[in-house]
Length: 124
Image (cartoon, rainbow, N blue to C red; front, side, top):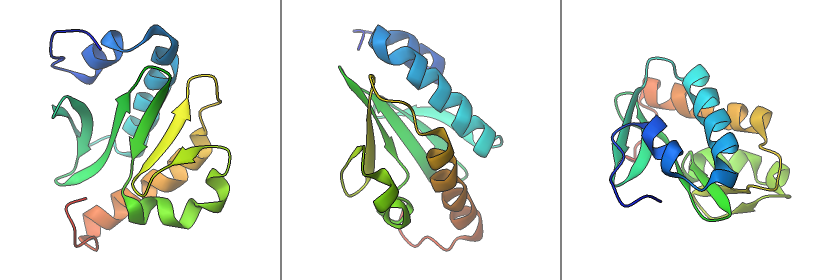
């Protein structure tokens, strides 16, 4: 990433590795469609969507992007995520892999609904 701190998500994407920028732009647009009223912000150097609590975040790395929709958000989709690396809280997509747009939408929508309904007890 660039040495200056990005102020907007677009700045963040512009500073990301060139190989990842197309994926990051599609992911950003996709998350905006899922949560059009969410506040977009940079927290801890990472793009966040907040409404009014954490919805999702993503980050750029040398050869992959990471998307966080929380452990609870990933859990129902673990079997479908077989081709992608995951951690407890993150989906990792290499820049040479297809961005699983449909799957990301299906993970992000329930997260938005849970936050709006305040069914999610944890900040994350």
